Length: 333
Image 1 (cartoon, rainbow, N blue to C red):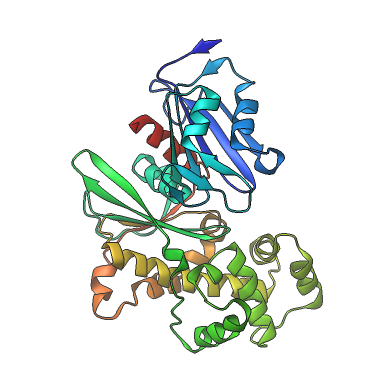
Image 2 (cartoon, one colour):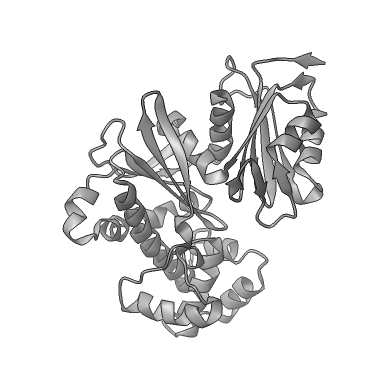
């Protein structure tokens, strides 16, 4: 069994799957010593999952960092959609590690931003980036995650946010009707309820139930009966030569809401360094995000429209961003 004091174990821990990799200073984050994806739900604890991962290699790390889908408080976290309670102390003791660091998964995604290259990004607005300016990260996936980066003397530092749970603010008559439609169903209508994988299904039903867009029977059955409605909507919006209008319009309504909230986040942190759209959904709907209305809605900030227009906007295309960010956290110690 080999032990490398410079080896880091990095993990992107989600409710469905967990991505793990071993990195060294020499190998860098794009050339891991060992990498594997495991189904989170097949294990009772993260410790058991990591032990399974380490059975495949004779390299033993000295430190570890994990981006986790949930808030981290005093070194402990409860994973959304899993009965896991994760503790830095317990992980270190069980795995024989010198140090374990837990961070929110959006912090991990944010930490990856400074190390992403041109091939990892698609630019929606070139803007006028300011070197060392604040950076906003908005990441719609199963939920809506948000984070930001601020420059200190030694580089960018990432900070968590729960901005996705802030009040949804409708911007036109359609969205006002959407708010009224949602309130009886969920009570407090946050941006996450209308701008995430969960929210996508609500948007589809809103367009269908209000008669704004016709839902053909075969399309409606496929979406309504799907285990993952968002995937079914995307397949019929982007994965066919004859897209279903209701699925395309669902994606466009989603994009208008995302554009507005990304602009909100940009204003809150004055993101002169750029706005980065992460998570699982933006890369899959890039064609819609490239339509002129997206940046028009992003810029619609009244007196601050001119300032917001200068913010670069990028889509993070690399699905390993959270894993790379966790590796950066581990390297920073």
